[in-house]
Structure formats: C-alpha cells, structure tokens
Image (cartoon, rainbow, N blue to C red; front, side):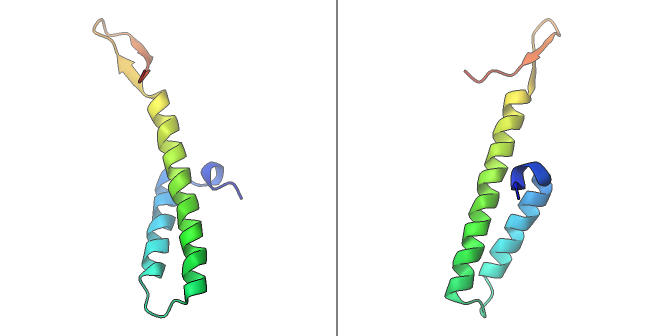
Length: 73
C-alpha cells in the first residue's frame, strides 16, 4: 500500500496520532512497539513528502497581481 497516494494528509496525520497513542499504552510489548514505530515513521515520511509537494505547488502572487508557481530557490 502506498500511504502517500491513498490517504489525505489529514488521514495520515490521524494515523500518526493513533500510532503515538498506541505507543503510550502500558500493555504494549517491545516487539509491537517496534512495529508501530516503524509504521509511524512511514506516516511521518509520507506527510513530509506530501507537504513538500504542496509547498512546491503554492502560488505566489506577484506585485502586479499575476500568479506564478512558488519557487523557494
């Protein structure tokens, strides 16, 4: 499953929040915590990738009112 293509940014952040809540549970085993941590890191990467893409697509309004693609460089 490609997390980045199947879920919205909000859904990925909710899943990441769920991972954190699971890791905070007292009854979680060490092995389970590693699996949840790994899944959480996949969500972190997917969120970062999505945010980077959005940043590149942001329009910047020029002084004359025209719109151009945001170029951080």
